[in-house]
Image 1 (cartoon, helix red, strand yellow):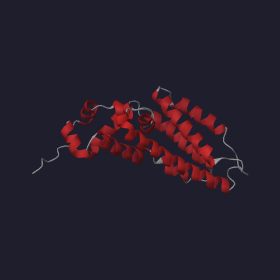
Image 2: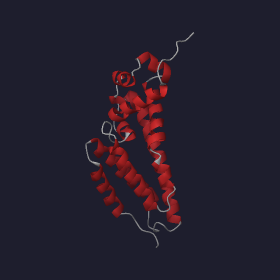
Image 3: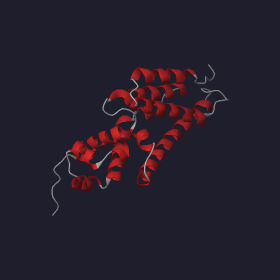
Image 4: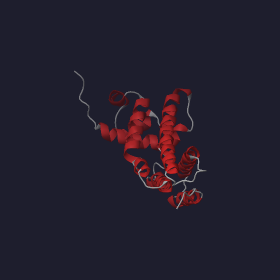
Length: 196
């Protein structure tokens, strides 16, 4: 008969999420994870599988709990409002928690060893799915006349993500929310206008 699990799996997952957010996938050691969760390595393996499986669960939790502003933004009436909501919300999230600034997805995808390639690829795929959603929303905005005929929805989606990812790196480097919001204002000043 197996031993009864003596820890709260959800709390352990939240603690692991904080470690991965702060240190990235490769920067997070099992010592970091066991200290943060208060759970020994064999019990973590038992509950979550290996480190990659734990990271994937933490990443899903991150999207579920912290990136709710993206689907909210996609429902807004104009493409500019979509971009503004995403960028201002990211500026807030990237600086809200002083002990883990920036973006879990961006930090995890920047660099990694060959062994971490599946994690990096999962993060790239998630980013690609988000970019596709933005592109589709901007295509709709163009069809509705909210964006001009000359607008390139694919380039606009890539632009929003480039600003978003740059802000995550800046937040990790210590930029304040005010500094990131100034970046958002500058980015939105270049937003193409459709018909009135």
